[in-house]
Amino acid sequence: MRLIGISSDRVSIFDIDNDGAEELVYTKLSNIIVEDLATGKIKRKIKIRPKAEKQKEEYELKRYKNISTETTIDFRDISSFAGDVILRLAISDVDSDSKPELVVLRVDGVIACYNLRGSEKWSMFLDPYISDIAVENSGDIRVVAISQYGYLYTVTADAKFLKKSLENLQGTPLCVESLSPSEDIYAILMREGILYVTKLEVMREKLKRTVRLSKVTTINLPKHAEPSSMHALDLNGDGIREIVVGFSDGSILIVDWKTGESCAKASLSDKISRIFSLPMVEKPIAIVLDWFGNLALIQSIDDIEVIEASPRRILIDIDGDSIEEEISIFTKNLRIKKAGKLINEIKGTSYISSYFVDDINNDGKSEIIVAWNSRTIAIYSNSGRILDSAKTSAIPRSVLVRDIDGDNKKEIIVCSNDAVEVFRIA
Image 1 (cartoon, rainbow, N blue to C red):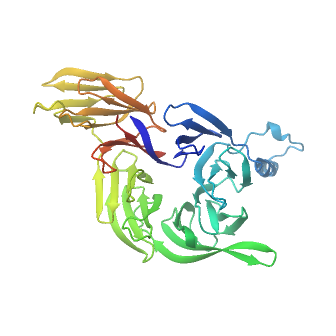
Image 2: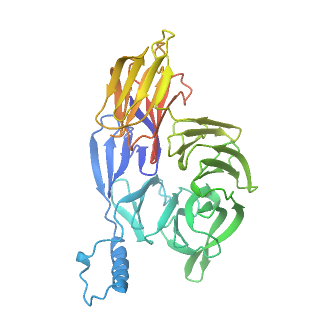
Image 3: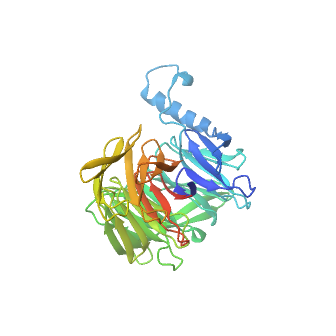
């Protein structure tokens, strides 16, 4: 099987060399790796060492001096308060040159833009408490970052950095999502359960530019739990993105920001971990994951399907003889019993994080898809023979088999806290 689609903050499938062949572009600590999608061979590594590191070092030195009694300080002996690990990666044309750029946010609050060959175009140290960014390829503003300090940072198409205090918004910023890129309308979710829909405008005052923030709508979310995740996508096909909010108690709320009203609800068993757009589909579909591996597929406001994680023990007929077998999951192995007798066992060297049973090749017999903590997913026959395997970008938490692109062939959907990946079965 092969990877054909992914939604992630740190991984993308993109023809970065413009040669008609797609590459897998992903972050690894402080580097960006470009890998041949077909062969898995690393084509190149882009080291992210932005010029704005000097701004960060000056900030840390000043901060260290404020808490230190030493009269002389050698900054080389001071460990960083954060790290240079990449937290977010986006590929988007942020400067209107008709060529996409690599936009990265590091853990330490440095944001930087590189061209596809790895040359820096701009960078800036914001602050070490950036909680989220949104990147777009249209509008006056191309990058928006929010800080738990109560600040909003923007980058315009001509690479001007503008800072705005969020003193008029109550709460601690948690997430930011673009709702209407051409109009520069963004949703800002506060940890305290307030959702602000804001319009950002670049203002020219004498010799400088500023960013003006005006409230479009203020939505007070239910107070039964803290919000934990947010995503925006057009679920009803009207060209307007709806907002999907997940909460710490597993509840899910879909909000129409135009009216400020909630239009649908659902619930999973545990805290919502992430919300993604399902890749490789024509019509936008949201996929919601909780910490137990349960899923919600939101195909429209009126079509929300809750899919529970496969249990540790299940009775199912996997060989088509109308007699149910017992599948049991243990730490590093999966056992198949028939009439109480062990008939097959799948063993691994890492932990089993999830599994799914389905007849993926339509031969009347079920296959077993096992996700391993070693960032691997494998397909086994009902006799326990391995048929195929692939690496995943993160530790899988949930597995689902569906035909998502309407070609009458099933795909394997693998969900983690960092990504949703779609694999095509050979």
